[in-house]
Length: 380
Image 1 (tube, helix red, strand yellow):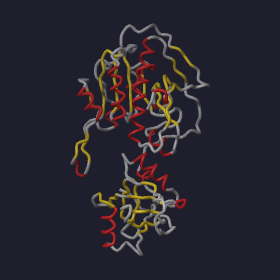
Image 2 (cartoon, helix red, strand yellow; image 1 turned 180 degrees about the vertical axis):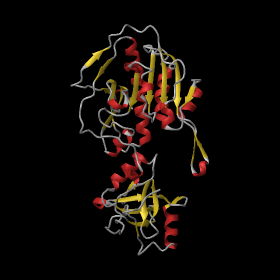
Image 3 (cartoon, one colour; image 1 turned 135 degrees about the horizontal axis):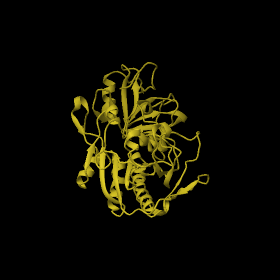
Image 4 (cartoon, helix red, strand yellow; image 1 turned 30 degrees about the horizontal axis):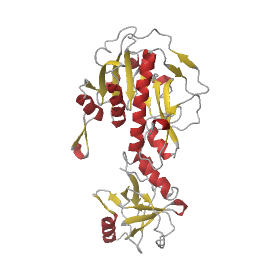
């Protein structure tokens, strides 16, 4: 993405306030808190800007056993990056109650009153709400969060996913002041903001990386301005009707063929499949779930007849020419799914699954009926 595609946010109704503190004589000592690829990209840019920091420490999530019976070890990408850059890495406790009493490393704890002006807290996709005791270790204008949306829109833990889900044409990233939980999440004053267009058919991963790159650049710019007394902050516009960005849940992954078009289903896949695969179920086979992988909107080749497919939403057949399941969706659209995973089974091609489905006698007149969530059915 070109630099010309990114430009500063303008908040017409914001009250801008210039910092009145004396020029900083020293670079920042930074406690950087994050966990995933977004935070890694932000940290990379911060680490390269040696004119703004004297030292950096990382606080991130601990290693965690995941998968069936804890067969895999999940390690924070930020931890791996920090160790490769020889940055001290500290892990927070596993549980939220323990985290509320956790103390950051020296020199941020024990507390100094008032907190030093060159002590700076930065969070980027950290995934935990910081307790008041943690925030109080830093001056209010030294608690910064890099948030990937055009605030006040999409406050919450999943702004990138909801930006794609809602088919937004524009997004951005903000560097904001962190407030205490009682004062509101993602509601702090904005120190810097950049806009960018949302590319057509973008995936979560691609949009995340673009926003993280711009977020790191913006953070460094804000810190340079803070050191030279050029930094300005503006209050967020008050608008309670804007979209929110709640955490992605299992309900977000369930496909409703009666209500969603093929285009909407593909957009949902692009937004959340890195977290949760799209799900439907097999009403004629014990309500087993079926994951839908790599879906596309089906368009028959030019001059080819449209496959004969029931108009009932959720009706599916196997198409030999595309080697995929073709599924009827809302608005008379059709979804093409080349790879599936039935509950308790391995990931397989649509053709292999179809052959097995015929053996289970759930194919009737060449069609399998897929369902939306029946009442009382819970997904794993």
